[in-house]
Amino acid sequence: MPKRAVAACVTTALALVLLFSFKTPATPVSALGGPGQVAVIPGPSTNPAPTTDAGTGTGVSGPLTSTPPAAEPSHRHRLPGVLGATPAPPAAGATPAPPAAGATPAPTNAASKGSGTFTGAAVQYPYGQVQVQITLVAGKITDVVAQMPDQGRSGFISQSVAPILQSEVLSAQSANINTVSGATYTSEAYAQSLQSAIDQAHG
Amino acid sequence: MVEQLGALAAAVEAPRNRPRRIVATMGTVIGIDVRDRDVPESALDDAIAWLVDVDARFSPYRAGSEISRLARAEIVAEDCSADVRFVLTRCEALRQESEGFFDIRGPGLLGGLDPSGYVKGWAVEEAAFILEAAGARNYAINAGGDVILRGSPEPGRSWIVGIRHPVEADQIVARLSFGAAVGRWAVATSGLYERGKHIVNPRTGRSPDELLSMTVGGPSLAVADAYATTAFAMGRDGLAWLATRPGYGGYAIDRDLRPSWNEAVEPLLAAARETLGPAA
Image (cartoon, rainbow over all chains, first blue to last red; front, side, top):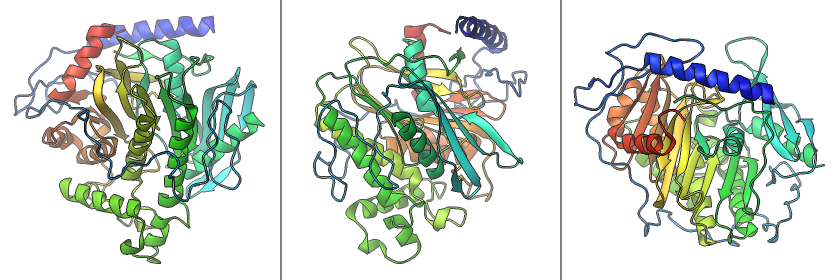
């Protein structure tokens, strides 16, 4: 862990140096007269020189707004206890909900007792099969790796595919960032395999 | 601005005394983080039960779901539940608003009908209302990288949302700071690295390839999610289109890893720089 931390710091420093060396002064690039901020994100595959014709500046835009305090945009507001056909929610309290029977993914607390690596069931889906492996340290999920076919290539690849778990790691490591937005690989098969890995960890 | 997030294998010490959950449902992983100490655990149970219920009724992967039955023409829209009819109506409105870029029907979609691009954001937004009904005013929900948040993580601080690097999964490229919001904020991202969701440009019939990712912020997660899909499919024109949507703005990363963003997003980036420094 200390070695990793050192490596992470060195990588960060390098990335920062790279970033600042590539950053171009803000140049108006938009026909609409927008701010046209242009920079290049250091990346592993491409690292092009900054160009001035890049970027999509936009000018006409109001401020970002959050929902007004009084607004209830919901077409109807579901109150606890009126969930229709849903099985009754578990009783209040700190007890983790037990896994529900059947194929329905069950609510699961991340908290558990064990440490170790747990491999979920291999679940078939249209592009092959997906199998998820989770690592727990002191009851917390610290890593999720999915094996799934890489579309366009043959064979399987392993990749970490759970930004929410990155968020967990982040919020613990950095007081600065609370959560992460990103596009995710999502699939029913992925969720099913992950759930079975979580169930094993709890069992 | 690039931050190395460190090894995922690092042990995570969960903050104590506040409700938080992780659940795998709706084909992804959803984390609920409530910072109000007086919100009962049962509210999180209810929110999760709601999400699981929506998955059962809307998933095109479940043969018995209303959506699957609708796709097979076993039922018609008029037979569907109020929730399904509401979602179908909203999706049609978004299709028209986006000039066809957001479309839940098509030969490339599962069963020819897949409203998942709207349903996830809508369902998570409804889950937030369940939390709020139980008194939650300071919380964040992350549904597979789509985020809804309100209030602040702790007194005197703002929620900070990182935007994921489109290639390196453990790095972020930018940070958005949401000052203690009186209402809700939403952040959604669509990307080329998002497999399993087939985004098509209706003008070309091809997968859009000008951008690697498009992040959209605004008041509603359901709308932000649909706008992110739309603006991503539009490619370089996406930000200009977003600028015409009141209350929303975007942060795009093109295929050469160059970021650009709407003016509307600048205050959020600036606030993060001001709070955290230029490259914290």
